[in-house]
Image 1 (cartoon, rainbow, N blue to C red):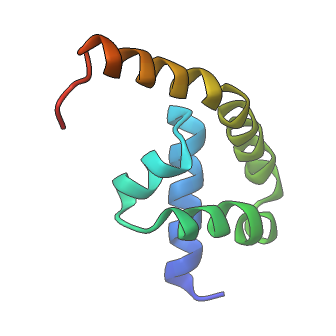
Image 2 (image 1 turned 90 degrees about the vertical axis):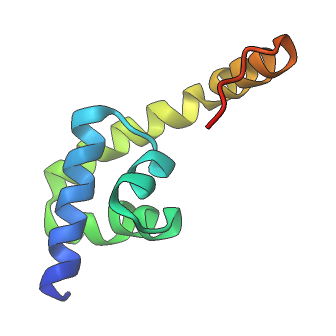
Length: 86
């Protein structure tokens, strides 16, 4: 694995664990696609740092379990006219 990829994998993974962010949020912050972030943390990270990979998996699993709540809240805000303009 090239050094710049290894460095990116570690930075993204640390960011996800520290901020409990989603794959989309991390992709936006680091300027890469969500597919790249997902590949980095699910395939590349276990080869680089198994302990950090376990922590990231926990954050991603929690985000996956909560996503239906976030989606419902976004829909609720949309129809109430509370949606923030980006």
